[in-house]
Each structure stands twice: as structure tokens, then as C-alpha cells.
Image (tube, rainbow, N blue to C red; front, side, top):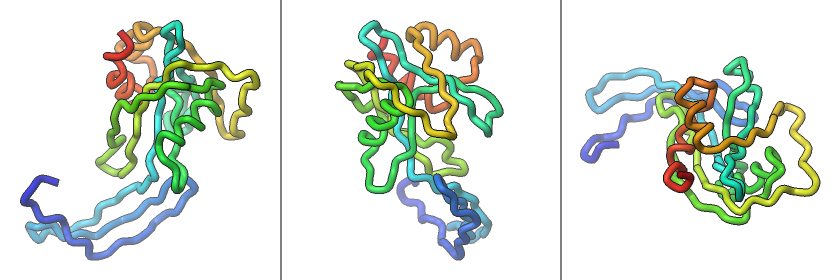
Length: 182
């Protein structure tokens, strides 16, 4: 919020949906100019994402079916932060579960809101290096349809500019990691 501005006054709040990964609420607010209205928000615990880089300089990505997008998207491994879990713990767990790699060197790249117009979800992005391929590949969750894809940074950048379906959190994180990749 800009300094000097009063926050809106919360007059009423309703939980419209409580789900496994997020909640949907509607808040009736009075703005500093006295205008009133309803604001809808998806409340999400946040997520963590890794930009994994092999010793050969390849990026480890996933091609994953996403119901809402009605297709397979290219994305970096990511996951929802569990209660009382640090984002670094989340992504360490998720990278192993989704890719079969374990990273031994981590660097935080930054954090950003995913869709602040209607959600409070924050993504914490990390660079994952010094990867070790696990001997026993992990079992995928029953609701995941994931294929591991290795690409050079140049190949991914070309795919992004060519309009290949790549999710926004992966594009944002790729550009945060770019100075460490080229």
C-alpha cells in the first residue's frame, strides 16, 4: 500500500469455499473515499519453485497436464507450501518427488505474487544446482501426469518467445535465474 493511504475498512467477510489447497472468500469493504463494494479473493498458502540446472547446464522442466488450462504446460517443479513449512523445505521435497533429482546447492532468486488481482498466492523461486539423480525414481501422486524434460536455457528462451505453453511462474523464475544461466 502506498504510504499515507488509509487501508479499506472491512465491513463483512464470507468464506464461500474451503478447499484442499485454497479458500475463496468475499470481503465487503469501505474504501477511504467511502465507496463500498465486494472484493473476491482466493486465499492460498503460497508455493515454492525451483529452476534446477544439471552439471551440463540443462534445465530440468516438467511437461504437465493442467485441467484449468486444458492442456500440457511446460513448467519448473513447484509445490504448495504445507502448514508450518518453510518454502525451502517445500521445494526440496517437491523437486525430488516431481523430477527424481536432489539438489545440493540452493540460492533464493526472489518472490512474487502470482495473480494479485484475485489471489494472495506468493511464489518463492530458487535456483537449484549440484543435482544428483536419485537411484529410485519417486512415485508420482495419483493426480499428477508429469513428463521430465531437459532443455538448455537457450532452448527454453526460444520456446517462451515462440509462444509454447509455459506457465507464468516458470517464465518469471526463468528470467530471475537468467543471469546465473548464461
